[in-house]
Length: 111
Image (cartoon, rainbow, N blue to C red; front, top):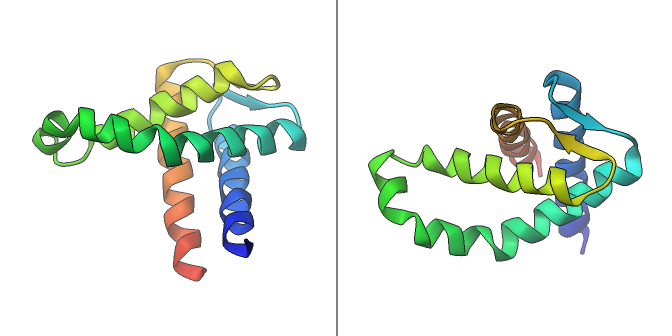
């Protein structure tokens, strides 16, 4: 249970950091960021593995870089689904996904 809460906090921190660094990503408040983190976490658990299997050939051809595109698409979808969290363009979603991924990698080293 503690692990789930820590991962939710890491996603929330990543979303806030992305909104601070990327001009096309905006978050209205803590509630919106937490909702976006929960939805992004659920999508990462249930939808992302299916998408990864479906796009396995292109992921192998790009040596795994297509995974960043998948992360960006999921973040872009969350921007449409959660009120108070907006992602302006795909490029903003791509940069935001890179930031969230890097922060998650760094924080996972400490946990």
